[in-house]
Image 1 (cartoon, helix red, strand yellow):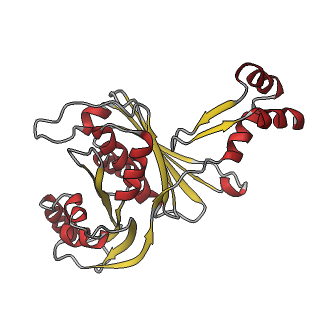
Image 2 (cartoon, rainbow, N blue to C red):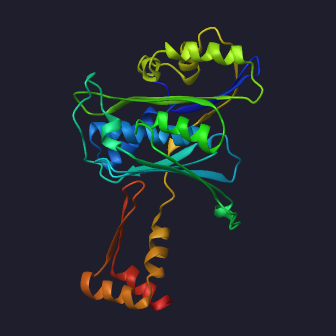
Image 3 (cartoon, rainbow, N blue to C red):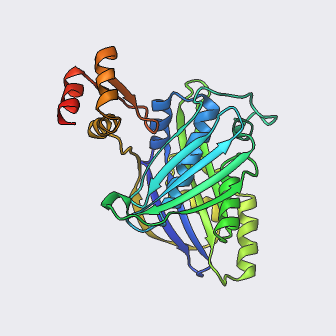
Length: 298
């Protein structure tokens, strides 16, 4: 039986590690369906959404994080944005781009992403009109495989030694995402070196994160299989989802901001305006009446 998408926050019982884990199958499938991604692009987008969601889960209520992969591979770039409430959205620049399978017969996300830079922007308060200087960290991509790049970012830019595992399983026949999720395990300052070494040994032989998800497993089961005999306590569990901020009202605001002259030109030439949201691929159409209302109120 498939698990609904959810995220858990946990801590090792010895106080050495902070843990986040999530099942994100439905939200990854929804994003890939909306953007009509190729199989390898689906894997890349699903991993980026899951990783960004896990990063955002540790933030305060009004904070959100934007993760940008600015890369030279065929995918052209990836953007994902998440908040602490458990919602995430994102897109890839070239959703139809694909590459051959790797030498191991796997989807080659690293080849699709290619070299480039990873930018992580943390912001707070914008939704209530409070503007605070955002924090931005940037690191070169180390592999393009998403999880390794986020691990490198956390260690280099935020000085948090972490283990990041992300996975997306794309059904070979239907080309649908049938399992997605991952975890981030962060080392608490002052953690015992023997505990760290033991964790590294466990993770080196841990099953792939989608193995338990494909069997209907939860985020907790994923961790149990990855961590073996390392005891941990789940602190909270919450639902997560793909959710966009766009709306018809926002589309009206965007067109209004263009100015009366340009809106009049749209009305005369096209008898309307069509806007597509990059994040969710939703299309908004403003008819003649809507444009005339914008002009009259301008």
